[in-house]
Amino acid sequence: MSSPQPEPLLESELLAAVQTELERSLLGGPRRYTVEQVAAMSGMDAPRVRRLWQALGFTVDPAPGARMFTDGDVGALRDIAAIVESGAIDHSLELSAARSLGQSVSRLAEWELTLFNSHMFERLVEAHADSSPAQMRGIIDDLVRGMSTRAESLQSYVWRRHIVANTERNIVRPQSGAVTHDVVVGFADMVGYTQLTRRIDANELDELLEYFESAVTAVISSHHGWVIKTVGDEVMFAADSPADAARIAIDLQEEFSASKNTPDLRVGMAWGPALARFGDLFGSVVNNAARLTGAARPGTILLDEKLAAELDPDEFRTQPLRRLRVKDFRRSRPYVLRTDQRSSRRR
Image (cartoon, rainbow, N blue to C red; front, side, top):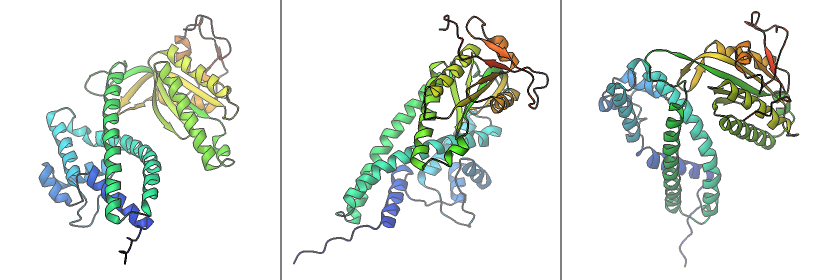
């Protein structure tokens, strides 16, 4: 008589097994330490551990004695303490630094997990019917380890490459205190995006957002600019050179006007001092660019007066507008950057 076949894992059991293997492979083992234990092991007090953990974007269980930290978590908190103690980061900035790191990496992790899921679960479903729980754990372990090794290597190199790229920008200077530097800040958003999302399905929306993010990133980086952030239908970008910023805006409009399946863009840009803080930009120049974007007509580019004055008229044609009824623009005349009259001298 043949031995009974193992019962296949249920979907809930499969997901639980994946979660267990993720923690074991990526976090250095199961959750075994309380806040108080981590504080003693990392050389911090318990309130500081809680604040840092929440700043990184993770939940702190309020139950006394809750075991929520792994060996990997302890190591990460020790690293934060060591970096602060070394003087590389001022103690007053550690929460801001942790918050910015957590927000950035959270988005990266969400994107990677989407790709990871599509690959991993295809493999798991194939093996699901004929594998025992022990065999499934081995399959999951192999997949997780293979993915994490490659992802960590890639992320490490891309991080190093971005360190080099950021040091090349004029806005990054090793000075103490809050310092502003002149930069062009721009926004580009898709016109009628909200109404469009009501008419298309999820797959079409995914394709539109993928095209938008890919296209704007390619154009911005091709002219020495950089993406600050994308939020749904809008991208915020910056450039050190007014001419580079103008080329970005013109090429963005040309890219989207050539496509019949995408909404029109409107672009607003301003030139002035901005405060660079943890990968973002702040200041009136950011507000001005955002307001100009909101006032721009579909398919057009609006500039503030300072940026228009910086552009070479032999390469770029600008046209002053009547004063807009936009907050803080009573004393500044906006300009339209023409996209159809560029000089042959354009590089």
